[in-house]
Image (cartoon, rainbow, N blue to C red; front, side):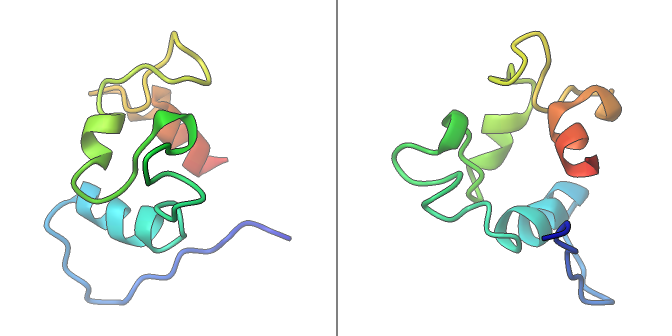
Length: 87
């Protein structure tokens, strides 16, 4: 099974880049299912549901590498989220 290709609707307007990531990646690829990153015990303590994802990601230490941030402000390529999505 190869990588999942996200689908975007041409002309879709999003409030921000993060809103696009929320809807296209987190919601659109099933990351917010109860078996993954939502519910009372989300995987890795990372709640990716709308309204919670930013606080779970922005400037928060990664459980994969506590020396790294899930989203490192001002340095996207050093952010664990970027590295996971780019892989």
